[in-house]
Structures are given as structure tokens and as C-alpha cells.
Length: 347
Image (cartoon, rainbow, N blue to C red; front, side, top):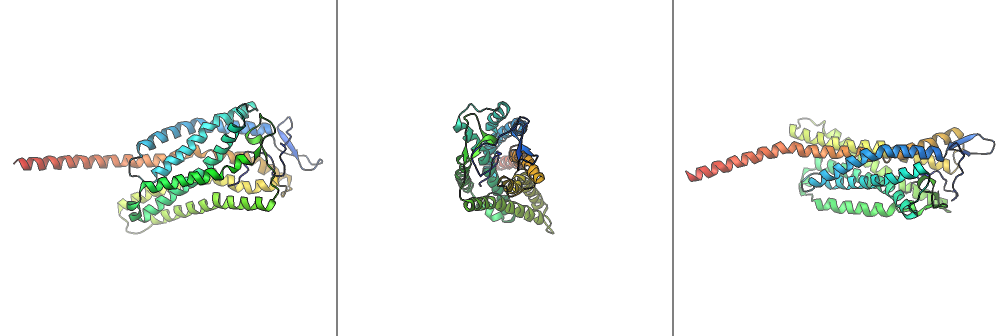
């Protein structure tokens, strides 16, 4: 999960990049007029996008946490995973005002520890969200196609899986703050430099493993679950009740796929080209400019999941609301039967 996001510096050194007054940085040989996005561009862009994400992200995830806690006692699929997903989003959203403050004021007065903590929380949210979206997709798919598994499944299993996700992702994401170094007490986030990694082979190996485990494997699983769930709807002579269940499962799994593709896929796909540019493997000026200007946009998309994930919670709460008339009908019928039984006993 070694990503070099939220930064404008190459692996090759620890010195921050010099920015010109108009917010651009010259790159390439002295004779080349090739500029990349500078500090002004990045600060303005990040401040704007995080401000857009903060208000709806805070409101929707606060409501989601409240509603999911109300439904925690219900026997519903993926409720534990959804609760953990909302928690990851909520924690990240709470750190956004500090990011906005820094990008607006160009200084960080809160100390190195809090800077690294906020930096860490962004990637903790990204990879915890990827894991929980994958868990939700797999569980919905398995419970739909294997009903007996759903009957024997206990919430304790979900709790154990969630704890494992937090532990593994939490430890893996420590890489991000540990690789960052600041030469100024007022610098943070995109202006942090990166510790030099001497062993290029080790770096490439870590990047490959990170991309496989943190992106490609979850991508393959979510695509497979979505395709199989959609295919199950095309079965012939399927009872109407089963069709409704499969449609609900398909909506949930499809929404997981949408969040994954919109928020996380662009960043991870762009990161490959981003590293080629920062390591000077790509020499073309036009390619460099395109990659470096697109990188902040795709990195910001990775935080936009805080606004999309609440749609998953909506599907779950709607399932509960759909069951309310059924529960009320059964309760009313049971009361009638008990009254009839009591009257017959008296007679």
C-alpha cells in the first residue's frame, strides 16, 4: 500500500521543490520551458475540494453512524462492515478542516505529530474503505447464492474480520508518515519531502505488492461479485421473492463497485504514471504536465468516497423500512390469534 499521494516531490531526494511565484515549477533541462503544477495551484485546488467534501461528508456520515447504531441489533447482512466503513469516513472527515486551514494559510502551526496523524488518516480511510467495500460485496454475494451460509453466519465473525482489517491496514499505513520528512516546522501534507530509499529494487517490489494487495485484488473481487450477482438475476423460473432479494443485493454490490471505480481506481491507475514521471523515466514534457496536473484531482477523488458511501447506508435502512409493514402485519396477526385462542378457552 505504498502510495506517494498528496505530494509533489520525487523519491530521489528529501529537498522540497522550489516553487516560482506564479505557482509553477520548471522541470527538465534549463533550455526547456516545461512547467509542472506548483504550490499555489495545489493549495488552491486541495482547499477547494476538501471544503466541498467536508460539509456533506460530515452530515451524511454523522447521520449514517446514528442510524447504523440504531440497527446494530437487527439481523442484517453487512451491518458491521457498514458501521466500520462509516467510522473510517467520519474520522477522515474530521481531519479535513486542518487540511483546509493549511492549504489556505500556507503554514502548519499544530506540530509535526498532528500533521503526520492527519496524513496517516487519509490513507487509513482509503485502504480501510477498500477492504470494507470488498467485504460487503463478498458477503452479499455469498449470502445470496448460499442461503444456508447466511443462516449459520454470526455477527461475531464480522466483528473479528473488521478488527483484523483495522489491524492490518493500520500497521501497513504507518508507512506513509514514516517516509515523510519536513525541513520546516510550518510545512505539511503536499509540501512534505520523502525519505530517500536507496534500494530501487526494494522500492519497486513494495510498490508492486502494494498495488496488487491494495488495489488489483480488491478490484477483481468486487467485479466478480457484481458480475455473478447480476448473472443470477437472469435465471429462469425464479420466484418473485428471490428476484426482489437479488435485486437488493445487486444494488448494494453495484454501489460498492461504483464507489471503488469512481474514487479509488483513478488514483491507483494514475499512480503508475506518476511514479514514472517523478523518477524521470518519462521524459516527454506534455506527458509530465498531464500526469502532474491530473494527480491532485485523482487524489482528491479518493476522499470523495466519504460522500458516496452513505448511499450504501441508504440501501440498508430502506431494507429495514421495507420490513416494518411485514413485522407489523405479523404482530397484528399474532395478537388476533392470541385473542381468539383466549376467547375459545373461556368458552
